[in-house]
Image (cartoon, rainbow, N blue to C red; front, top):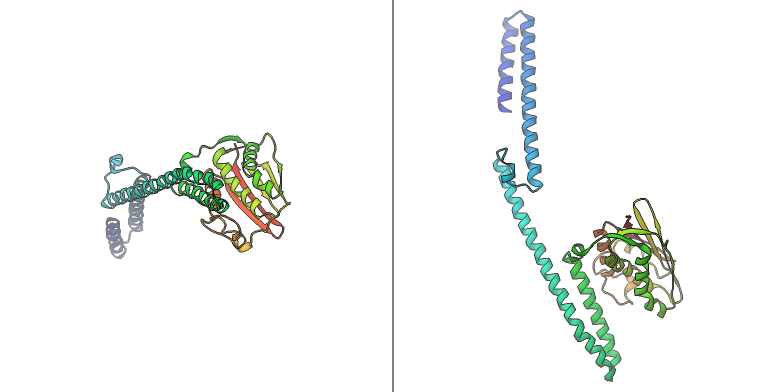
Amino acid sequence: MIACTAILALLSSAFFLLWQYSESPWLILGYILAVLAVCGICFICEHRKNQRIFERFERILAGESADHIADEKLTPTERRLITRLCELETREAKVQNGYKSISSLVADIAHQSKTPLSSILMYTELSENGEIIRTQTEKLSFLMDSLTKLAKCEGGLIAENLAPKENSVKELIRQVIEANYSSADMKNIEIRCDVPDDLTGNFDLRWTSEAVGNILDNAVKYSPDGSEIAISACAYDMFVRIDIADHGTGIPEDELCSIWKRFYRGKNAEKQNGVGIGLYLTANILNTECGRVSAKSNENGSTFTVYLPKT
């Protein structure tokens, strides 16, 4: 850029001298064209230089080290950029490994706690305060299961174990209803299902059953006795849609964006057991397999809509 400016200054000076002392218009025109040509050449050279720098930056940001860019000399700025990126990658790897270690530890502790909890439940039948012990033990078992799921989600273990493939949506709904049938039957709630037999989607059956099951579990909890829950599904060009509609207490409009947060408990959830991670896990599982979930509510109940990738 400095050389271009210097050349331009010299040519401008020469043009000024010729304009003062020469009467030849062709000579002046020649010098004008020469100035324009030099400016064009300088512009092209500067543009190519910047383009090479940007290309090297893109390659560095894409993960290539200095050894893979041997065809061009790296500038000190580029070398500092590579060093900084390596430091950030190392730090990120350490953080992720730490999360995974903690998640694995929590999952192991929760798993090892199941045996003594089961033993406690067995001995409650022999105790005078058996019902109290049983209730508290079931709460503790529920909390341990929730802690295990949360640890897997926070540590990225769910994402690592997800294996989406073509699965039957009707089989997914069957498993979800089966897991929640007893609690619905205790409240005399009818679960009505309208899902085509041949409807398929691209999802992990086990984890998606967990995600959709959390929605149905909430629908059963917050629906009045003797009510109805409707589950329907249909196919679109790029995804499969599943609707779960209940006639429960509903969700206040100002809480609809917060129900997906970890440990969030709404005003209507105070009388129900839970720690506020069910819908948080649902959203994370579905997002991980390129799906999503939404909710809408009014005084007549709530409707949760799940979108799963189509095969």
